Picture (spheres, rainbow, N blue to C red):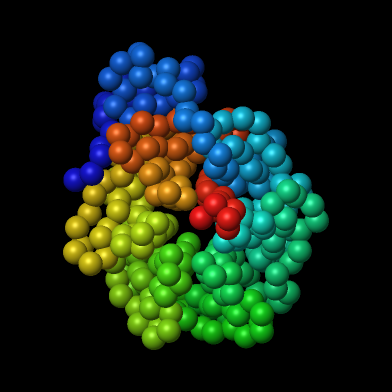
Length: 310
């Protein structure tokens, strides 16, 4: 198994959460007070995420190392599920500002959002392919949920996956080479993670769980494994060998995995402190840091580095 965090009991968990609130830092091992004072590394990455403040959910961007967040959207409608475009210049997200979930995009610096598709369907959870040419998303355009892919230049739409009529799909994510998409579906009997080959449309199951995310090398898919009502793990599944390693095993609900540009750490949301909060964890040693404060926050995504820095 991979790096695992200390797993306290109910009483220790309370102290675990209080240490996070007091120090703003959450070490993976929690072995010493000195470790709790470790500052977050001075990195240049940014995270986009959704946060609810005063009852309104909008999109924010914050330096991963810590600092004041920037509010990107401001609308009474529910804005959520933000992801960066591969060039890091725009943010795509789902919004209910028209009364129904639809796909929108906005410049990384903020400004007036633009609606990507206009129809009567509910469409959400979009992800742009690594080459920027295709958009994967979920839609009930013909009355039933499906995983679709749209050509960004021509506008042509391809149905990639359709399961049963009442299927709940979730969280499509492109592989780094753009050949596959990971997603979740509750077909046929509970949430499972699948991978679909985009050219051939061949679908294969990966594991029981949800919210899949490819690792940066494309060899594994991380996902949420929910085995207990109030607790979940983040697990990486090797697509070739089937071997799994636990990435996050905090005594809480842990969701929304996303990998840093260099693959050395993971960002995720956890309710370890009593409300959904975004954390970063270094994969090598389990050292972790709290990122968000001031309201429930979910679905982080690391901003890709500029093209010239890749």
